[in-house]
Length: 134
Ligand code: CO
Image (cartoon, rainbow, N blue to C red; front, side, top):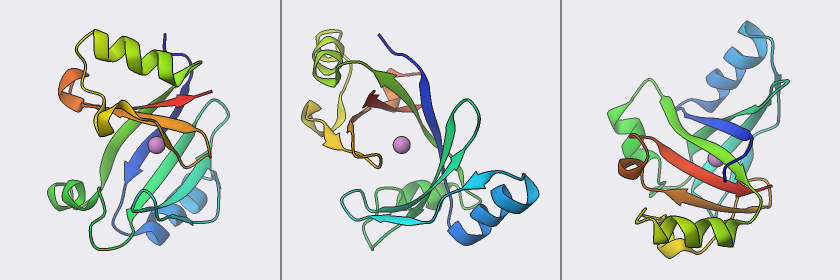
């Protein structure tokens, strides 16, 4: 069911410093920072030849990544995003399998303007999984 790795997301406290690390130290192509008020984060995308890295920093007081950064003050891998052909079908199948689809299983529009869903880390090897309709 899952297809390509769309991106790996890394949560950081200092988005400017993280962007500079990827741009200057690692020599990667980085995007501008974009506020995602619906998701409570600011994102920078790093384009690699075969996938992307999504840098996430908190936006606002009740950002969903605030707790993660409290536990991981230096930052860390927050989620992986896999592509699926049909997000509704994927959601139905996963629920049937007993997996916890966050947000009641209703897709939201993600950072790329495409429908996304998140799956509970306890059901997927301790890793928060994002599915994005390709
Ligand atoms: Co993501």
